Image (tube, rainbow, N blue to C red; front, top):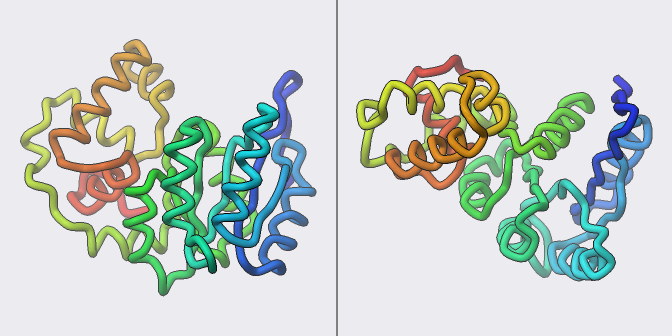
Length: 225
């Protein structure tokens, strides 16, 4: 289970935000066992997280990934996620939710979250989600993905609005591939891959790569997670 750190790679820096101290302790204990991920701070609500991230930014010590609970006092996870993505676009956010709160994830994704996890996810899946977010990839918890897929509002257009290359791009996005992975797979530049992804989202009326992945699953373009 222990992650392997490359010879010259720095550990992925993670910031934990949850109003339950026992959840933060459990995650910190898990990450302490990994070589490639380190916890650089934690907060009990969204406002405290923003305050600490502002202090970290002043020292040029921002985390790579924030694990964000959605239901918290003072400032909830959705509002905090939106503020983080506006102020620090290079910081990725992974939403933490219970299955009963799955519908709230839609709003978190629109606020800029890169993915989401159930709070009772296996430890290995938590590590995988953090690594995927740091690489700029989409991470979907399979159980929540199925629930969200059923409730996803249909966009104005269908896959027929896409060119064959754009449908190819959509499938790769749904498989969690980053722009760099897509570029490598299709032997195109990363800039071209980024443009294709943007065109796909625009044509389908979707707000994020994660929504595109859910849409592709619902339309049968890729297998259900």
